[in-house]
Length: 419
Image (tube, rainbow, N blue to C red; front, side, top):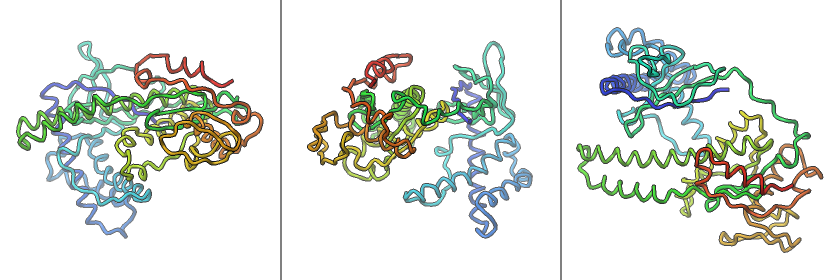
């Protein structure tokens, strides 16, 4: 399996200038490749074939473009191939219903990374400091805060400059060890399956009765709004404007890091704790188009959570299934009768069978039931949908999920699990 490991770089002032020079050279090459791509007729091959034709022109380009000789060849080739990657990405978005245009030339502010592919990089020790040795560039100090896995093969290294001005090295690795085999569906114990309902007020509510509160980013957003107002009063592209722009970028990055840290830890917990995980296949695009609560929907990043959960389930040998979300809140988990509920009604009370429970807990059980059906398990007596009713809710603050090394979430989930 392929993974990315990210490390902070601490380049000197001179090294920063060299990094920016290589980055801008790659940007200009990317723009040239896009220009050439638009000149090649579509009937001369697929997108990838036409971009490869441009890549094969590199030796001739170097004869008159002196700056290209300053950059390692295994950096120039992936830069050109990014055109094909970006065009294919736009095509996938178009298939999903998004309105997309054509690729445009990249400005210096938009092009923020370049990649060493296969060779030209090496981790080394110099003067007691771990450095990343890059061909035709420099030996850059790196904060190697965690080792790479012993069975990892580094396939590429991407150097990225954040909007804050920080530089990072992202190692793309391939692990030789196969992920653990998924257990047979017939052998999975009833206590080792879980359905998860996601929301705004409570980020996740599962069938074990655990509710995880949404991450409180209100103070971070207030700070961001203050900094943005200050930025709007600066003269555009002045020194003060640039300094303030960087402070705004730092606010954005703080929010992004806190959110991703929260999602990584929550998805990691579910992937490791259970043998089967069922979630909703939400149409977040349609939800964002709604004028109601779109900001909180975007902040929740449900698609990011399910994407993380999916690949981590694959890594841990856990079954992962997405189900149709329509009606999971209305349907009774006990008798399947649907009951209309306004958003402000937070309790489920079935008029047909009398079953009562938390609204989100009822939805989580319906998600699990649909997931089992989708996998062909059905509703036999061995499934938790029939053998147990949802238990009471044990709220877990999002702050506890974010805190590194905190066992509180795992302890509370274990304590509230349905037998």
